[in-house]
Image 1 (cartoon, rainbow over the protein chains, first blue to last red):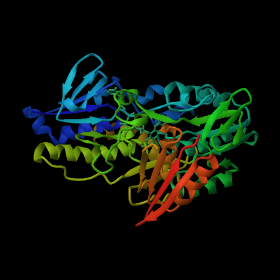
Image 2: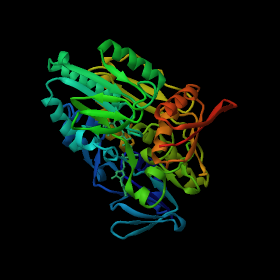
Image 3: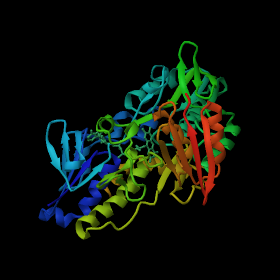
Image 4: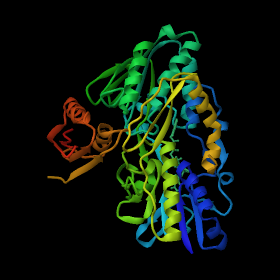
Amino acid sequence: MKKIVIVGGGTGGTILANNLARRLSAELRSGEVRVTVLSASDKHMYQPGLLYVAFGRMSSQELYQDQASLLEPGIVFHVDPVKTFNLDNKQVETESGVSHDYDYLVICTGSRPNPESVPGLAEHANHVYTVEAAEKTLTALQQFEGGRVAIVTGVPHKCPMVPLELTFMMHDYFKDRGILDKVEFFYTYPIGRLHSLENVAKWAQTEFDRLGILYETLFNVKQVDGKNKQVHSEEGGVVDYDLLITVPPHNGMPVILENALGGGGWIPTNPNTLQMEGHENVFVLGDTTNIPISKAGSTAHYEAEALGENLAALVKLGTMVRTYDGKVFCFIEAGKDRATYASFDYQHPPQPQPPTQMIHWFKLAYNKLYWNSVRGLL
Amino acid sequence: MSDIKRVDARNSFCPGPLMELIAAMKLAEIGDQLEVLSTDKGSANDIPEWINKVGHEIVECREEDGVYYIHVRKTK
Ligand SMILES: Cc1cc2nc3c(=O)[nH]c(=O)nc-3n(C[C@H](O)[C@H](O)[C@H](O)COP(=O)(O)OP(=O)(O)OC[C@H]3O[C@@H](n4cnc5c(N)ncnc54)[C@H](O)[C@@H]3O)c2cc1C
């Protein structure tokens, strides 16, 4: 029997498990293959919905479904997080002490916000990367009566569109509250333009200039002085704020660090085969890789599809049949009722189109369709 | 002298070579050397600009067959 163990039941792990269950349905039924998902939670969270929670447009309850209900029959699922990776013995051990042998291992444990890594950031800034933080941001936005809103972005971070989306959505939020004339936006970004994607940066700059949003680039937050309400950057910049919003820096999960699988919690991964460096039967998906690509659900999705095809081929034919081409597709909310998107891969940069209401509706529809997407029906 | 850590950001549009370097710098120790590989022409300017602004050190910049090799040292 070939044993495939998937560690992590988020976007990447769930799509992969369902993809494999379809491709290997006969082998699963006959007992030639077993697909096991080990995860840390019995709930699956639709993380992009956190952005809408911060504006009161989705409730936190709407973000969750039972993980077991998302998996195809035949997949073995345990809520029992992995504690130890014994890659030399092809074995993982869980927190409850159970050992799982594997022929193929897939690690997709995601990433976590780490505002604590910057002095003052966790105490003084609001963000949208956990339910508690998004709900706190909603309260902060509701209570804000005017002044300067500063936006600071840490490196690396999950979902590259959030810094722009938050800014545009706050703009429209305060406009609707009738206090836009009392609010000044000051957007900062770590590199020398407003977004990593050059075309998105150009588009954003035109929009910011049109909306009167101020900005400073090459700004990497070093510390927050909550007493004086100032943010200091590595580059020597100082920005005043009345309300501080952050896209916090991220790390991989502690279990990756504790097992010394990769610095910062990011596992060295081949960008085309998704194999962990030095381990040909170990694969890595989604946020956990060190591939220089967006940490986004759509990245995990396209990677999972490529890997599903390859793992099924390895089981059936003993060889891989394709590579991952770096495909990513991200919606970009450009306010409360307009959106655009960026689609790119390793060879082709995105060409963002002007935002439309139609694309915003697609995004809202996707907020519901996500559940079909992770089931593999989309 | 410490080993040179390679940051392979070829074909990276997002987050891109400079963001990759910033992330790698956070994990590096003072004195460490890093070499960024980039296929993006813009980063041959952006990276030195950032390194100089923060006060790290550029060891060498060169281009070979369309790949930029930007070698830096973390100084603080
Ligand atoms: C506010 C916000 C907005 C976003 N917007 C977008 C967007 O518009 N578009 C987009 O594409 N992406 C977006 N994302 C990013 C997207 O949600 C993530 O990139 C995606 O979920 C990553 O998938 P993953 O499978 O790598 O990790 P995750 O989906 O985070 O799953 C990780 C899984 O690992 C499990 N786990 C953790 N530790 C262990 C362990 N020790 N053992 C076993 N299991 C473990 C967890 O329980 C979880 O099930 C957004 C994220 C946020 C927070």
